Image (cartoon, rainbow, N blue to C red; front, side, top):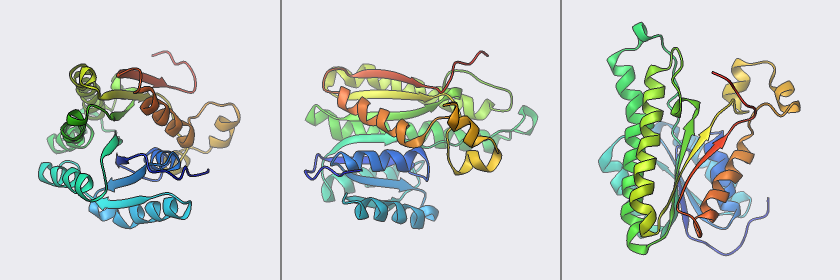
Length: 248
């Protein structure tokens, strides 16, 4: 993937793992943005490897070990990027927090932690992005959703409530910030995604790929780039990505 040489601002990806988050970071770096990637501090080695991969391809990238649930840490992260890296043009919130427990086995601690990771951290990310972008009258805030953003399923009460809450946060931000020049989008990734996790639990991934029945991280990432680019003419989107129609 060729890297565009001229810097076009900064992209922050909160929750940049080895799947969709990493693909989003690479895609925006290829468009000429300097990319900042975050995960919890214990994953800093993997983050540094991702940043080095982007730099090796000719892009610009920095890694930050941050727990997105901690308000003070998120405030400091945004202040550091704006001061030391440059103006944030794109902020992507991509933390998953997908867990499955029957309702009787879902403890208060599990429910609270999933909500903190998938919803509260998204609120903090959106709030701090708004503080940076609104005075400039431009920018994109993009949230990664899931099937659970739209419907609950057995065993996913904690995850579905958090992702549905994140979707509501995104909708509220879109209506508040859109008229002020900030583009907000929520992306529902409605289907299985090819990657390390999916391949660890399924043995039919190659067949799914051959039938175009599984989503590919690099293609999902291009949808995020497209959404940012649409921000020049529209300020609110909800994009539904799915490999096939499902009936529930």
